Image 1: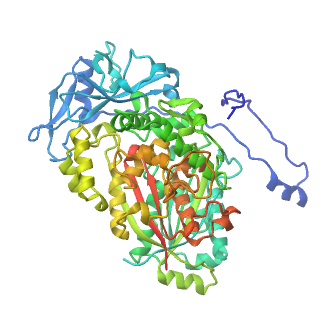
Image 2: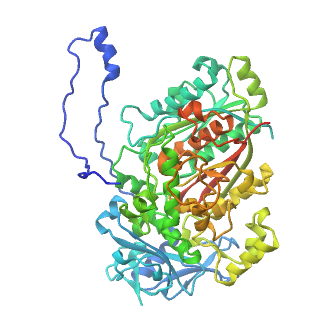
Image 3: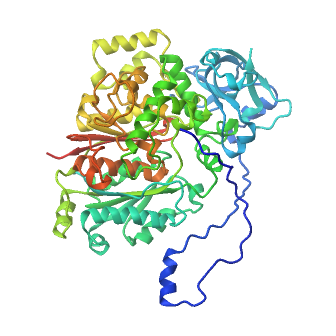
Length: 179
Length: 453
């Protein structure tokens, strides 16, 4: 199935100040308006949220200080790699514990396209990491693998976490690379 | 609970962009089609309809809060009761079930469900960003939020666990696009080969552009009624085809938003909570025990526990004990070829781990359609006879209702009348399922519909 060559479509056309319209609004002209094509206008929309990490904040503070904090249920020992102030099974408050950000790749993909925000970073690798100290997985970027040589053998690969020196207070303050 | 009939439906043809109509105008198209099938005018229907449920997924795409009431208002349904439901990709399936509830509970005798999405109002990659906001914005989105990427991760694990291949998944793409050749409502009507699917641009390894559904503008509507409502509709002149289509099973399940948080359950827990009744045999127990011995854990990220629980509930409700043979067709939420393969397992058409070979077996293909594939088995249960999301398009809030409309037409045996050809009419369709699925398997609905004998 051959794809026809196509230039990328982008917004940002000319500003238009008028459109064709009948000079006389006769009955025929009014009826013909039903056949008029639609007017499309651009409506920019931008907003800055003041997002609180709230009860999860210590996790991000930990990343900024080179420490990986997990949430553990005191009674069962069930440990979440992503912070969670309450255990989903016992309903009890969890406690913070430090775990080592070293493990294996559980699942991965190479994104050759992405959401607009991440398009400039394509291709990039997303991976769910199994950490021996946790019962749940952790979603992170995986670097130092060839995105054009994706291979199922990456699953099971030993990986280590590295913390960004210049923290952005995002989960990407830690990323993983083959150990 | 009272008997609930799904008596009529309408769909606007899904297309990439409908700049000629506002979302209200699209809903009106679907609504008018549903009424035209009944042979009722709007004033006649207005006398009888008790209220509505509206479905659309994204306030970002709509760039309009309370769009539901604007559709209600445009249709002329004010001041009757109504509300909007939202549950990601499953929004339409949830809407279908909420309308069922309104009638089953006795709250309404006639209820209209309508849904829409206008996804063309932003550029494709901004649209992907909007959709990715339906993942945890503190932990998942910032890492590289992209739904195709999420599903691709889920299927790499499926591939690793079970040996599932991209070529097996590509069979789903060929099947659904080919079915859509005969569905005039479908957005992408294409004759493809496995090689075409694999050669298409890679989006998120191993999923190519032809493994993934497209964004769409569209609307759909379904009319439900009780026995009393049916009598009232017919007394006012509605022509409702026989057999009647009755909703006989409702099921819904959920799972953790962050797929990283999903459990890795033991064999015993799986047996206790997630086994389907028809799987409770010595042979299948032994099969699963063997999987667990080899490191399989459930659901992990390779399986949709919400889909399994939805199927389990719906099958129990509808007394289905052998889904593959007791369902004549399924309209299945195939946003990705991979998720259709994974859902075969969740819905018990095959066992966990067998989705790949099952996809290529031929069992889910339409009889009488030439696919250009070498299929070993005869069709048993057509999956996505309409072409599914992959070929019909996925205007999120409309999708689950679109499945409902196609299911009604299958069970009424009116596909030929609606599609202008009968190639996609499932022969002797008595019972079907519609399956609606939200982000990585967070909300899943399964609804069973039957032709009343």
